[in-house]
Image 1 (cartoon, rainbow, N blue to C red):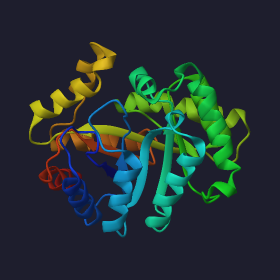
Image 2 (cartoon, helix red, strand yellow):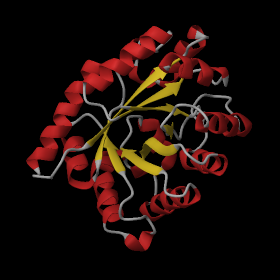
Image 3 (tube, helix red, strand yellow):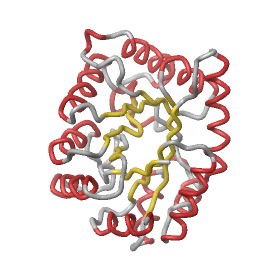
Image 4 (tube, rainbow, N blue to C red):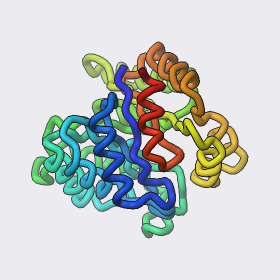
Length: 271
């Protein structure tokens, strides 16, 4: 199993200098991929912009959206953004898409959230059959979500599944659903399976505070998400082992503290 690391593009206060240096250091580390999250109604840096900056200062590491909220964007613009990052990075992009879970993002964008699932399906179909939009035909595409329609969407249009986090047992259940949906459509082989988690290996309080704020829309469940933050090397190794045993192909660990030293701490934990 490969292990990647997230850019702190959704941690409030992160600036361009930090993101660029984070990307440069990640490229020299043991990480397979550098990934971004997506929010609109939040203090954050737009994901494709962040990856474009990362592409300019990296050579080896893969780049991924984990995920981008597709329905918030015009389909042609979404394709152009993805194709541009892919070109700037020399073909290192993996495009993860989902509908998102926060209604305020849709309100700010002026997009009807009631059609978000159908809208994403339309976008995926266009991306898969839209050579005129500039995306390469073999661009790896992942789809996230935890509902039946999301798994069906993944199996019909994508190359794999992007899980939204949690303990390995939660990933294992979602992976089983992804395999079932893939099999239902008689697709050959198996879907790519990506997972994610959060870590803060120094300032545990700051990391928990960020997660509670980022997931405040979930109410009390935000405390459970914060409790799952990986705050020790042992916790990191245990989760990595659990995801690997559950069949994960790539695990992305997202920082909850925008401190460059966190990259070194994570590399040491993985070693």
